[in-house]
Length: 305
Image (cartoon, rainbow, N blue to C red; front, side):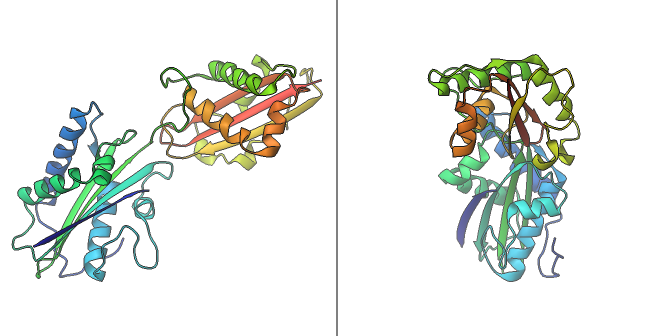
């Protein structure tokens, strides 16, 4: 008997000879219990079974058995993220996958087989990292086997992910629009090297908030935000510059590390860095909104005489 394991960080019909165990639900529950025991030992939140993840896992297990391959990417394309979305999963989430294969298995999959898979995954640094990743909330599991003893097991994981930026000092904390604007102003002023500093302005911030609602974020794209149309008539400024950014799988709520992430991203680009460093625009509004599933959009509005 040979066991193989593979991992990744990112519906086909069943074949008559690709046997799905009658007790698949119980096997999935056991796999989840083992995963949650491991996560609890590391102080991580437990995961919950999700239908879409289980469907994605079962589709891939069946396909690998039917076409005799062992990989995260199907022949001709198709990743775990594609399979999750095909099953109805949310497009903003981060998705991870662990795979196991057994050739010449002498018995049908049972609880002890699930425990063997878990031990193998936990003994592999990459698979263990998937099981113990932060920013996950949901779990799926499937195992199939044919009459020749070829067995494929699949674990799938999903969640909003974790914030990507790094905070120079202090912990990562949730942050509302007013605090986001203050932090963004401080970061920009650190770039200006003697040029006129920017000051947070409530009017600019509220304008962004009105144009960038957190609810209904799925219908918003960067090209449709357009902060410069419909500026209030009583705004005293003559010149404006805007910067937009977005990310997926980067956490459920805006944090201070997100502010650093977006500002760092803009600073790395010549045009946006010049906008940030220029001293003629001295008032700022900055807002990050999140859909709770991993997608975040940031908008910065600078204004000056």
